[in-house]
Length: 89
Image 1 (cartoon, helix red, strand yellow):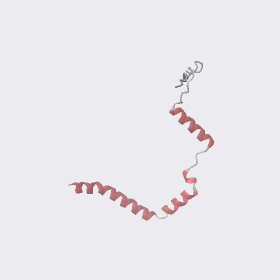
Image 2 (cartoon, helix red, strand yellow):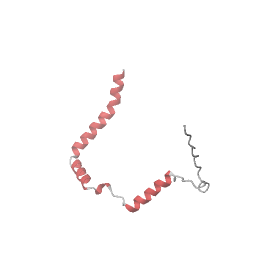
Image 3 (tube, helix red, strand yellow):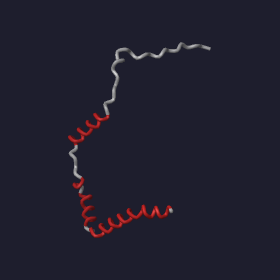
Image 4 (spheres, one colour):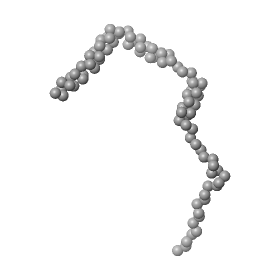
């Protein structure tokens, strides 16, 4: 059987030993992203979307039905704990 001489692993050179990559802090990276995004993309308002404005107009055109729905939701939310207590007895 022939034995081959194994190569020894090379150790890193001492020249680059002091220089390590350090990750920037999380807060610094978020502030950088915020600064870049504010300069490149101006903040658009939510109501500038024509589809959303149209949907809001259609919903608000039925105000009476919207009020009835909100009242029904409030009654249901307030009576649910009472029904749960009665069912537990």
